[in-house]
Image (spheres, rainbow, N blue to C red):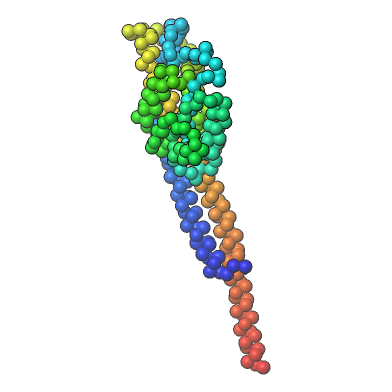
Amino acid sequence: MANMKEIHSRMKSIQDIMKITNAMYLISSSKMKKARKNLLATRPYFDKLKSTIYDILLRAPHIHQIYFNKREEIKYEDRKRGYIVITADKGLAGAYNHNVIKLAEEEMAKGVKNKLFLIGQVGRQYFLRKNYVIDNEFLYTAQNPTMHSAREITETIIDLYAKRELDDVYVIYTKMITSMKVEAEILQILPLERKKFERRKAGYSHASFYPSPSEVMEHLVPNFMKGVIYSVLVEAYSSEQQSRMVAMEAATTSAKDMLKSLTLMYNRARQSAITQEITEIVSGANSLKS
């Protein structure tokens, strides 16, 4: 059995770690709430954009837009796919990063002409070690999802799509299913699907579009895409904080269990030491009497 000094030292170390894990839990909780609040504040604007796009599609169902062009003439194996992979800038978040990277590798294995766009240092370091070709890196974005970052990403992707350097664009990120459950998910953002814009409340807006529905759509879609990217960034960031909260809560619970076990060991060692001292005193007293 370890002596009391060693046990006490281990207990002190665990208590210090427990303070850190508990603080990280509280920080992640605060960050997640702030991010969700920012997302909810911008959602009405992008919901309105979505309904306006639907109005245009309803008025001009045969409108030609590159954003809705599926390029069906291109064979499956010849399609150029772009993958925006969102990981964290650091670990200590359970399986958060692992699940995203695993899904990304599975999806990229389906094709050959892939382009990789990375958000987050964990994913960047992993794919560099695996000798993947990284087409673009959006640094300092994972921990600070802003509208400015979403605009930069959107402009880059739309430009490549318009130049036909990309035929399909996907985002691989982590979605918050419930307050206690997150899952890695893949979302296709280009080309857009018309049917996804038909899910709106009853009612039809008798609006006119100037100078033409096509030109209005040309301005609306990039802004709508920016909203999609921003919501995905915030969703991934919130999921990261949620995963870190769960991981830190589990670490704190484990630390408490270890402290209970070590406290029991400490008390046993202390009791053994006291018993030994009493035995030595009694033996010494008996020797003097003899």
